[in-house]
Amino acid sequence: MTKPIEIVVLSGKGGTGKTSVTAGFADLSTDAVFCDADVDAANLALVLSPEEMERHSFIASSQAFVDPSECVECGLCGQLCRFDAACPGIIDDLSCEGCGLCARACPSGAIEMRPVVSGEWFISSTEKGPLVHARLGPGEENSGRLVALVRQKAREVAINGSRRLIITDGPPGIGCPVIASLSNAAAALLVTEPSLTAIHDLKRALSLCERFGVPAYCVINKHDIHEDNSKRIEDMSGPRFRVIGGIPFDEEVPKSMALGLPVTRTGGRAAESIRAIWNEVLKTVDGLSTTD
Image 1 (cartoon, rainbow, N blue to C red):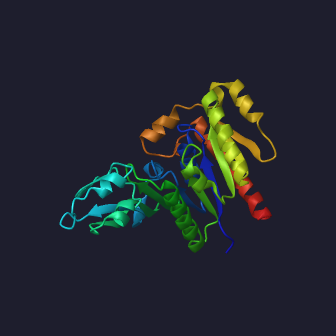
Image 2: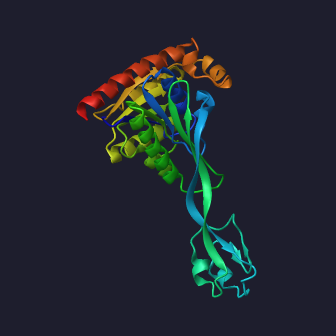
């Protein structure tokens, strides 16, 4: 089977409506796997109402553990630790960064490094198709590795299920999790809004797409609240960036979110616009299939 095409929905800035748009796409799709790569604050499942099929632990780091009965209280671990996590007979698990220096230096071998569970990842079923998602523990690191793992599992599910498309709800910003969600994607869909901060962050996200050679498309959410700024975004169009639609401000959107339903389940103007944008996405996918 031809490898599935992955469209990553990004925003650059949080709160632009990225997950709402992704959930709308999921509701309209018939041949897709859904992937929530916003592992630090995954919430696509809140709207898609999944039934959990698989649950797995995510182990991405180690932590120091001390055996008090073996500790000679020499204090060397405390002298060497740059994170103030170690003192004779005690390791502060909140401060420990897992570098392993204390375990290597301990003269009595009282300290050992053990793998720790940083989060969980899931494969679930929804009314519209499989959902691969994850939950990173509070304060845990290596979110980029968890994003890469979730995307890998989504590809496996798509291939095994002969599904043509992967719709990935990416994280906000332009940091490590975004880079992990964008690499090797077929295209990025940037959801923005006509505000100065959103335009600023859109430019940064677009620069990241250009750096990775990923073609970018744009949706302007609430495009009618500031027509001049919407025009500024449209004027940014170029060879590898194109605005494919706008979504008007619609009070039905927060109502549908409060009910835990995709926006497309309502009869509002926003739902109509998302349907039109989804048709543009399908045309884009057809084009990507042709050039692959």
